[in-house]
Length: 155
Length: 155
Length: 155
Length: 155
Image 1 (cartoon, each protein chain N blue to C red):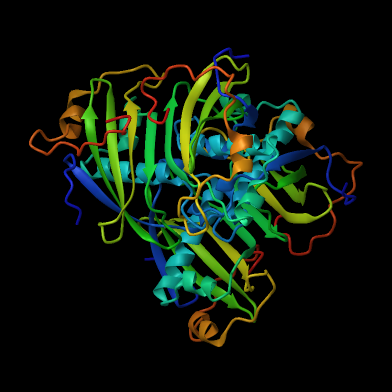
Image 2 (cartoon, helix red, strand yellow):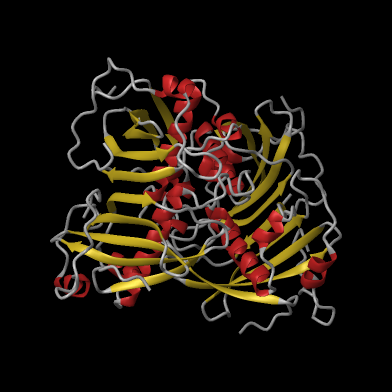
């Protein structure tokens, strides 16, 4: 179990690397990490009882406005990897997710990243996060702050 | 130039293999062929002056109901490959595309496949192809029939 | 639990639909089904104690030579879907996997498909399946035969 | 034609948005931008007469170590988009690509990003860029510097 501070609430998602996610270098293709981060984001919302399909039907969308990933160690076919995901920042009409990707033992950091999202209506216009969502999503005050990551662009 | 008979109208689309399309075996991942076929399908519709976005806005959709592909020779990163695409069958509420994928010289057959599509409304119910579309899409009577492909499931 | 006959050994794999797997029609993109089938194939091999990475290091590869999928009901973002996978045919240098994709209740058939694989060496030449692998992979004689699927091309 | 300063040599690559690149929001899925950037990177190397397959066969690899993208305007199915790519920084064993993605008129900026790459040997160890490659890749001294992008993490 990794000891770094991390925003709460958080979620851990296990993911098995498929052959389709690898590339000719023999490792997971770099763009797939954003896709795997997205899977953990979905798990995060589900863990809070938020049904994103219902959110969209209600006219709210969270399109990605910025994404960043640093790749530290490659993962290969059939590896079981684990994503740690949480929300590091919650604005009035935006939110930022932070991710750490580990090997199965949760000790070797494979990658880390962030995605910033706007909160918009169906026409793509910025929209204030409704109170019920802010309450569910806001990072716990008592939790430790993110470890300093000087080069992280979205922190 | 390949001499086989093929339905007309038809389209040839060049495609450059990306790294993301390859897998750890060093070749294009098998599911990507269906994606590449889709690119040629789009090129086919554009070549006939059909704007598929407008078709969907008008309430018609062509979801894939069946897909088949036979893989003959692998393609690797940076290869220029060429897809030959056309419509081999046009029903009242369905259509079948046929594809042949070649190397850059258009002589070595890399793969061949078919996709069958329903014509539906926005609720997914089968809908008769409108006359203006049938006229544009229907395979030319004068063209040669497809070469016999005994194992092709959708022919 | 679905009652259809199916080759054994078999495996069931749960899969959560990601946003990246969907397309503008709002449902899982058709090529992604082959990718999801691949995930269940990996789970199948693991369930038999076969380490496919080790198989490849040993110089054996199972490239896909033919793939087929019929799409019955769409799946959308966040759906939990379940793949039932097994081997329906084992040749001297080839094998065929069969797949059925269900909704979470395992009652509604969403899609079905097959993939045929060659067994090759690192140069891509057909190679006889080694005895230890054939023993592990061969469909159980006592199991029921596949339900008749008249249009399935690879059965 | 866009007038911003940009490192030279540079390349412009046209790309047609496929259905498979879109997601249920109706636009290109955010992870696909990194894939599209990769396509322009390949075009860049080809335009300089560099055969990346040959580079890898010679034992040099350029794995992505960091990626960043800011999304400004969405792109939808069938859009023709254009990527402007170049190298903004060349280290002894690393290089950074910068990308700008435009609509077909090359005036509306859809997205911008960067990818940092290590230069490694087949075992993944950092390796000095060989002189012949540095000569081909190094940004022209006479070219204008990148426009200031205060939040760009890799600039």
